[in-house]
Image 1 (cartoon, rainbow, N blue to C red):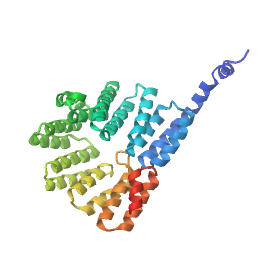
Image 2 (tube, rainbow, N blue to C red):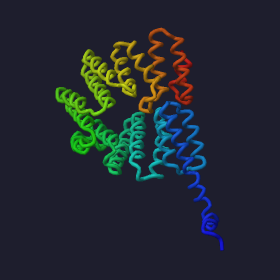
Image 3 (tube, rainbow, N blue to C red):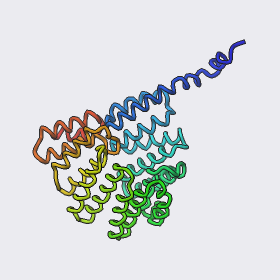
Image 4 (cartoon, rainbow, N blue to C red):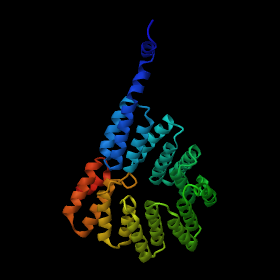
Length: 328
C-alpha cells in the first residue's frame, strides 16, 4: 500500500507544489516591495509580472503591482490589479484601501460625468476597508478625507466625517484632530481648523507623526495665504523629521509652490533620496523629477538632465520623466 505522503503527491501534486513554492513567492513579493519603496518601479513591475505569470492568484503580488502603477499615475492598470487583489483576498483591508485610492486616481483624470460614477466606487472601497479592519488607521484616514472632500451625491459629507472621529481617536489622537481640522476647513472656519491642526501636533506620539502634523499646519497656512507662517511650520516639521521620510518631500513641495527658500527645498529632496526611509508615499523617481525641475528653473541644465535621467532609469514607463529627459 502506498504511503500517505506518496498518495497525497499523486492525488494533489499541484497543491503540494504550491505549498513548496509559498516561501519563495513570499520572498519574491518582499523583494518587489523593497524595490517599490526604493522607487525602482520598473524592476518591481518585471519581478511581479514574472511571479504572476506562474501564480496568477497571488493577491499580494497583484496589490504590489497595483501600487507600482498607482505610483506612476496609471489608473487603468492600477485599478485592474487592485480589483484582482481584492477578488483573490476578499478579507484583506489593505487591498480594499488601495482599490479605493486607485479609483480616486481614476476619478481625478476622468470627465465630470465619469468622475461621479467612479467616486461612488471610492466610497464603497474605503468603507469596505474599514469594515474589514476597524483598526486600519490609514483606511479610516482615507475614508475621512473622502467624506470631507466628496459631495453627498457620491457618499460624502462632513457629518459622516465627524461620526468617524470617535473611531479614529483611540488609535491616533493626532489623526482624529487632523480630520477635525479638515472638517473645520470645509465649513469655512479657519480659526477652528488652525486649532485642530495645532492640537494634532500636540497629540502626535512619534517624531514622524509630529513632522507630518507640522506639514499639515504648513499646508493650512499656505491655503490661508499666510506664507511666513507656512514656512515656519515647515521648518518645525523638518526639525522633527529625524529619519528623513516622505514628509521632507511634502515640505519641499509646499516651499516650491510658495516660491520660498529654493535652496532648502533642494536640500530636502536630496536628503530624502539619500535616506533609507524612502517609500512609495513619495516615489523616488518623482522626487528626481521634482529636483530636476528645481535645477532647471535655476539654470543648471546639466544637473537637471542628471535628475531626469535618474527618474527615467527607475521608472522607464513614466511619461513625465521621459518628456522631461527629452526636453532638457
